[in-house]
Length: 188
Image (cartoon, rainbow, N blue to C red; front, side, top):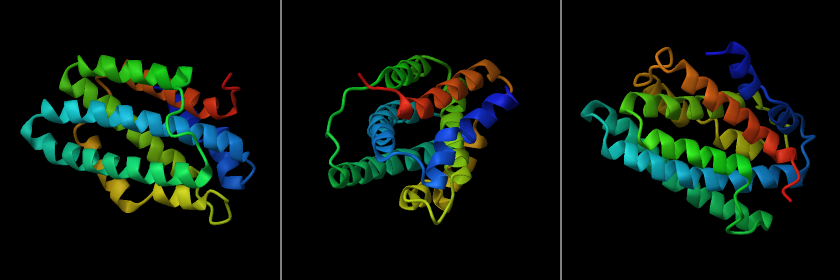
């Protein structure tokens, strides 16, 4: 596991621009639309992971699935408010993440839940690094840093084995960096 990759994924320039209020609306909206697609893929993955989870892991994963359903409803509301297309085409990084989640479906539970933990931990730490009451995106930052989400990430941490799956951790971290980068890329 690379400390440099953790730092790059959780203190990315995208997040600094969100915090500082310098991120263009179009860049944020591009990222938000792709994140909604990712969350739909994540729900599918996590529901399958729940179905094969050992009994002690089921409560954490079930709670995560319920939260993802609520998250998709929340995305739908914000997409409508922001005038975003309801079904955008997935960009290459979103497709790469979809492929990784598909691969994790066939991995042992310990590997799959470790990948899930990295995804969620990066999200929590990243948005925590972007905290600013002055940001025009403060509502989003607050939504993604609530104590309930932190508790969920802690629950996943108790199931994860990052030392055993260090290569997977680094792969997820690289994808996270690319997902933030995607906001600035021309979607054409």
